[in-house]
Image (cartoon, rainbow, N blue to C red; front, side):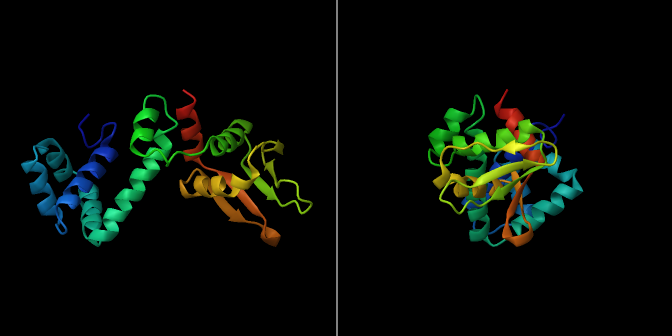
Length: 193
């Protein structure tokens, strides 16, 4: 298995792209490959040269405005740290680098309840009596999502949607449905190991 198809290939390529772009405000694919060779990453350069789809994607990425691309790298770094903060063996490193970027325990609990229930989604039920809103499991299981911090529930749900761990749909009369994703199942399995 070569470096381009092995475990960590995505992180390796993104990390190298980030380093390249932090050193140069411009640069195309040929300059990136030359830079890889100069930095003694000949194995990566050779792997890239043999993968036309990867070369096409890298060309597209490298044509992005420099400031936009640096901003995207920063967002990707934050998202990766958020996920890693809940994985054994990586949590200390993630929290040392980005102490503020962790997914809350409540958000993890909501996700775990959905995944473990076998339900396809949960539906938001707004309560007007002053009680906390309800989130009802549907399509595959029944029950309520349990949570302890109502004032942060909106923030937690937004975080899970942004990370692609939940998919948001608007239902009739403006109510929201939060659907489980494959990424959510993988994430819960990874942190429960």
